[in-house]
Amino acid sequence: MVYPIVVFGDPVLRKRGQSIPLNSDIAALVSDMFETMYAADGVGLAAPQIGKSIRLFVIDGSGLEVEGEDMTGFRKAFVNAEMLEEFDEFASIEEGCLSIPHIRDNVKRRSHLRIRYYDEQWQLHEESFTGMKARIIQHEYDHIEGKLFIDYLTPLKKKLLKGKLSNISKGEVRTEYRILAPLKK
Ligand code: NI
View 1 (spheres, rainbow, N blue to C red):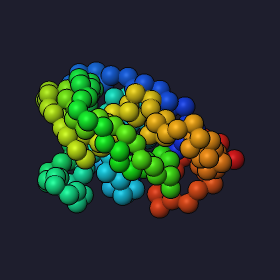
View 2 (cartoon, helix red, strand yellow):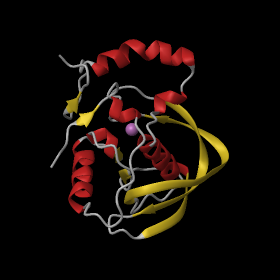
View 3 (cartoon, rainbow, N blue to C red):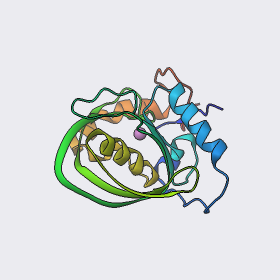
């Protein structure tokens, strides 16, 4: 099942996601989230983006070509993820978000991280990631914390984006995927 994607302005994108009760049945939801992400041509999707305020996100970066990095097999569901550490030098990379269509900007983030999470079979993992993999995880992790990449932009840039963001909230934006806009009349 493909969900519509909730866009900027919806309060669900600003809430911290609830933990999912251990061993609950999430197979169908995880599969729907991958399907929704592929339908929108995304590399990551977090549950708040389909209107669910829970700690779940999916990533498939395996099709990305990244210089100096092997993205093969980077397809995962992160359940009840907990960021343990973000460290090392900052990198500035352009990001976008399915919930903020047609807006892209550079975001400065740490280049290494350590994270603890369950997969969709409720196996616990503790892993380190760097580079583009870390970047995608940080972006999706922010979603389950109620944060968006535009929060990192300078006040001036945010001001310049105000009109565009307001149009997105009203659903006045063209997308190749179905959206749910909070202020659509
Ligand atoms: Ni996003």
